[in-house]
Image 1 (tube, rainbow, N blue to C red):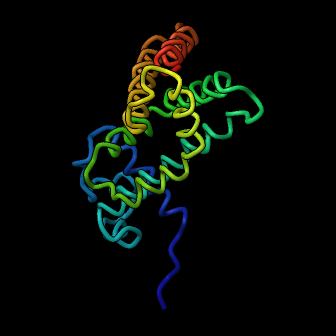
Image 2 (spheres, helix red, strand yellow; image 1 turned 30 degrees about the vertical axis):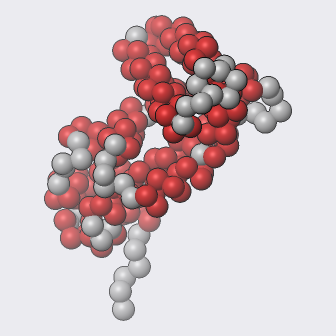
Length: 188
C-alpha cells in the first residue's frame, strides 16, 4: 500500500521552488529544488509528475494567494474609485511584503510552461478585480482597448511602483499614492 502524500512535504517543495525560481529563474533544476527542500530528487516527482506540473502548481497557488489578499481588501459598499484604491494598496503591499513570490510569479506569468487551464482558473478567480478595472476603464481613453491589455498596463504600473517602494521604503506611502493617482488618470 502506498504511503499517503504529505501536504507539508508538498508545501516544502513549492516554497523551495518559489525561492529558487525567484533567485535563479525558471531554469533551476528539480535536483536543486529537492536539495533546497531537503528531500530526494525523486520526491519532487512523487508530488509533481513533471517540472511543468510543479510550475503550474506554484503559479496557481501564488495567483490564488494574491487574488484572495486583494479581494479581501476591497469593500463592496464603496464607489469605484475607493474600491480601486483598496485594490491598488493591497496589490502593491502584497508584492512589497512578498518579493520572492512576486518575482517568481512574474517569471511564471511570462512562461510558456503555464497552461491555459492554469491561466483560465486564475482569470475566473480574479473576475471581480478584472471587472472593477474594466468598469473604470470603460469611461477613459482605454475604453476601446482589449481588457487583457488594460490589465497588463495596470500590472506594469504596479510592478514599477512596487520596485520603487522596495528601493525607497521611506517613500513607500508617497509612491503608492502617486502610482494610484497615475492609475486613476490612465483608467478613468
